[in-house]
Length: 186
Image (spheres, helix red, strand yellow):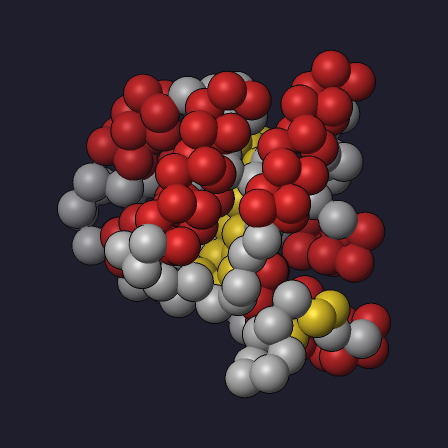
């Protein structure tokens, strides 16, 4: 296993791009616990599903998550989480196509409703459709994340590239690109 000590990694992408999936695999490979920014944004405790946390609460959670010398965070690019992009040594941008992400969102929705896949919140069909429309509208407008100049940015555009990235840079015992970029930035 490659050590994730001293690395600050941020994964961005549209809903359904595979941020959580990639973060889980990188976390295992690097010995890091991924932080899902959705979990900081939404208050999904019993009786509080789909309720936004207040700005101070989520900011405190974000600051706590970024306080360590190493972290791996995944989530959409948003104003409230901009500090994670600025502080990152490496930003991995999953620029996955709208059709792929829409398929993944629909599949995840059905799997959760059927009880095949766990969910931390009660997703509604309307929310799914709004998210899919937002992905398409953003793509049509050319929306992209506001990436800082200091971080090394890795752009992955499809599942093959993601697979190659994982194979090439996180193989057991191999010093990975992420590790080198993190040490160069310090």
